[in-house]
Amino acid sequence: MALGSLIDGAGQLDAAADLLEETWLTARTNWDDGVSRSLDEDHFEPLFAQVRMAIDAISRLNSVLMSACRECEDQR
Amino acid sequence: MTLATNANVRSLDALRDVRLALIAFQERASSALGSVRSKIDRTRAWLEQDRPIYWAEQERRAYDGVATARVGYETCKLRTVAGRHPECIEEKIALQKAKARLEYCQQKIVTVRRWVIEAGRQSDDYRGRAGALQRLLEEDIPNVLARVSRMIDALEAYAEVGSVSGGEAAIQPRAVSLSALPLGDRVVTATSEEPANATVTEKEEGEEPLTLAHSPQSRGEGT
Picture 1 (tube, one colour):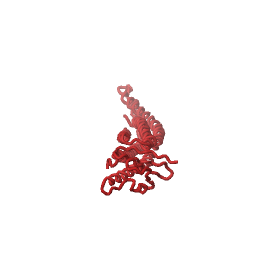
Picture 2: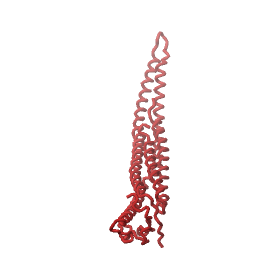
Picture 3: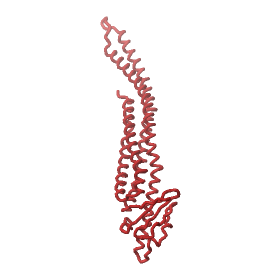
């Protein structure tokens, strides 16, 4: 894309979420009670789901904007 | 009726790691979303502002190009060489190319208009989806951080009590008023007087209590 791909941002978001998820899963092996389950169900699972949705949305928008830039360029 | 659940934490460091990971995630995810937003804005500005101006200018030049090529072709056709009119093939090709360029520019103007609308629609759709994540970053993660931090504080406070109890001062957990542990707007209360399985209840107004139970083996770990 002429003005830079959005995929870099999606990659940064994905890497940040991976790191958090890995840390959280490790913590869960050392912390298993009502509070950790509540955090997991009410906060971490929705958060990771939102991250995945955002990454999908970024990928879709990236395709759209790439096509737009390509078609609006002067290719003479 | 309040329902207290026993905490089962085997590593305080694991909780500290979660707190650090949450802070790092919040920063990196916000930065990533900001970078994406900035690129979307730049791309849309390019589509909405740069491209229409560029293609309007190209169209104007293409009209000029067609006019010039047409004059060249007509002038050529008026010439006679040895009593014959030349075929003017080069001039004819130049005119065809100029017309093709004009048509190309006019198509691009339509294409740009179409992509401005489509990119705007898709960007708005993305903003809606990313907005949900942005809200979690700004509102939910601070709450999770606060809960994890309170848990760590309570465990550290209790571990400290436990470690002191092993010294000469022999301050037993039950001897310390756990209800006096400062946890912000929360109240920590002991629900057991037995040091071996003392249970600490963390309660915020209007909320079910969080109970921290330490076994003697786990006490002091990670501190």
